[in-house]
Length: 65
Image (cartoon, rainbow, N blue to C red):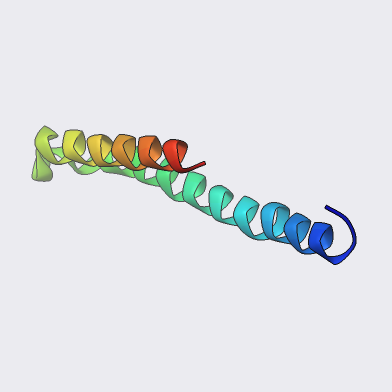
């Protein structure tokens, strides 16, 4: 890879995918902190299902990479 191919790959990988990963991590972390505060209303089942879905998405993403 050289020239424009490398430049476009670099910008896509570093700028866009890095930003998406950072935003997802931020949202996951804030949800992880805020969710236990409302467990009395929602119940532990909702929290467990949410973590299972996030695990499934992470495993699928890992397989696609």
